[in-house]
Image 1 (cartoon, rainbow, N blue to C red):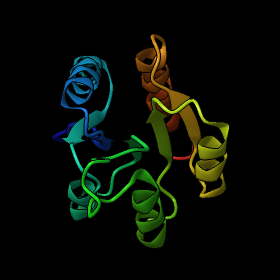
Image 2 (cartoon, rainbow, N blue to C red):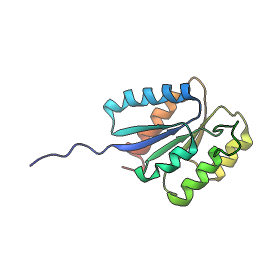
Image 3 (cartoon, one colour):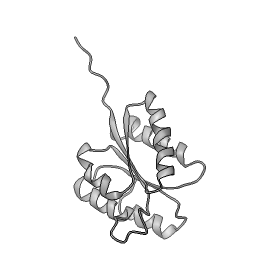
Image 4 (tube, rainbow, N blue to C red):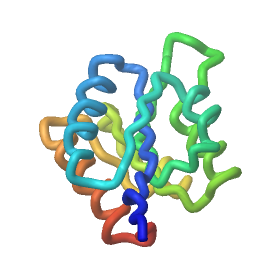
Length: 139
């Protein structure tokens, strides 16, 4: 009997800060050697929405996306769009915004949690992804 390789769960990271996106993506891809997820990095909400057919199991999302472009989707726009199509996907907001009103607004939209971009954020994101995929409702 031939054994199939373990399933890889898609994880989206959406952030318009290319250096932060690369750092987080690299760290999670490195971590992926020991876990069953595949990391997809997107620098805009539009890109992430376009690839929802990959059915991500977790979305890590910045709140402010391309703030200089008034036509660009915001993190809140992405949350709403994802909720319309895939309400079951956990969304983690990873933002530099230390504004309680923004955090509450995203939580009211049904995000899993709101994290600040600080020195502990990368390890927290790793822990959340592992928990959601391996221990949470997704397993």
